[in-house]
Image (cartoon, rainbow, N blue to C red; front, side, top):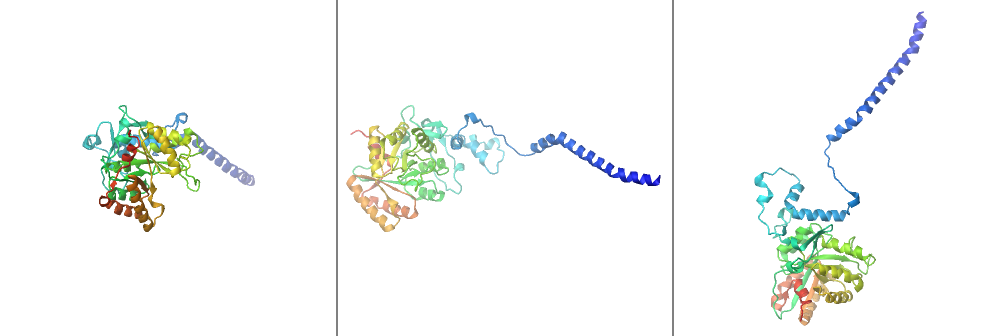
Length: 392
């Protein structure tokens, strides 16, 4: 009997252990099945989160969405500034921006110092007239006002040209791509110098407002296909030969919507795009309908096409005479400037364009300083553009 009991223990002990393991595992699985959803919900409830609604049927592209956000922020600067501060704090009634900010001109958007790029010095800020802005998915597009006011007339610099004095227009292009260089341009160049902003630059609304606040006329660059494409790529938002008219119209609107307050646009490269009138004509008509002027910085062949097309629709127009920085040799540029002086005294006016290289800016400052002695006058680009549409 004693031996049989041991045998029974040896047989049933492992079976009992197995039964306990099965029951324990089943209990755990049952608990997980019944409580996992609740546990997950509790954990998610403790996790910081945000919910964003998005309608795919009515969605727009990322670039268009960013443009819309820029428009909203420019028109709601107090809320936008508070939202984007790195260490937000609750505001008291006394600190509310609507009470602290000075009164603004009705129908104008004001760009605040607080929206300026970091480490930028203090400059005057200009405003734009909302009656000359069309809100669109591409951003704030310029338009002619109900009373016939045009952006190029509204935003032109206050300037009275001297009669019988040769006029020199100097345009600095690619403004805005470098914060340091843009600050230097604002500090060092006289207000009669025209700034052409690159549409791929960041914080264009602020930089353009600062330039206008300092008295400069401003242009928005329009990238166009060059003849040596793809060796030189005008970027993803350029007007291209192989694009449809609708695609190029959208590319134009994208550039125009990058900021507001400019007198007109200027071509970036584009000698391939502008060589055919049937391709450039719709672009020029769109520019004209929005009350802007056009500056052609392409080759003489392309300029002949655009000048004729502009004249046919009474579009204020100016063509670049020469690019100064083809060679960055100081001696070569000094010789070029000497030749330009001869040209302007024969023609009565010239348009010089240059990129903001330090050596170029240094020479330009020296050259501009000699204008009074040489009987030359530094002139904003709108003066020459206006002359192109004046009736004799």
